[in-house]
Length: 112
Length: 112
Image (cartoon, rainbow over all chains, first blue to last red; front, top):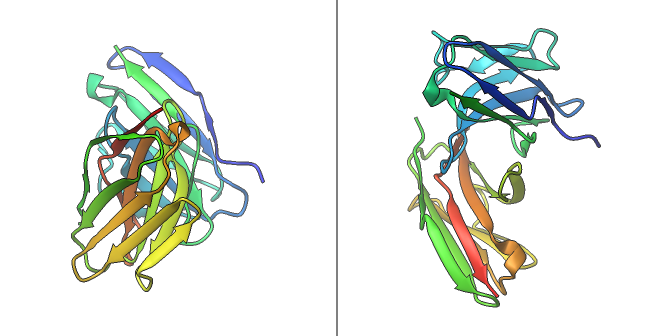
């Protein structure tokens, strides 16, 4: 079974620029999560989708972050404009049911 | 919302000794508690999990215990090996929106 795929793996941008991350979950997994993991901390949930609907986006900074999962499969997370404090690893995870979520390799974002 | 605290933040043990990592949670409605191992630069990997209707679960050298009354759960690794060195995260999943809340991580070093 293929795992969760993410791209790009690394991205360096200047502050105020825009960036987008892509996630392809495990086939058949209805639930998709985006997390932000700052160095030395645990993953923090940004947004959770169930199929193409948003379950929770309470911790998503909506003035600059947006995410979509239009067909209930792939998802994109966008930051516009980026700030220095957005430097982190962005992890995508998926699950079939409500448990056992599986993580992608992450995208390491550096904002200079 | 749920708050998960994890201790210790760093742990060093001699090879062959046991390691114990403890987490507490605040939301009594949380009912699923996974543990993840994250090696440097890699994705978090699910290593063991426990549901709230179970007090203990064991998988070879790894065990997890849960005390629902006290709202704490622990990871036990016996006969530690150098390859156990990694950062370990606990998490709690709410039974309302199914969100995961992570602890801050424990960096385990097993000294050969």
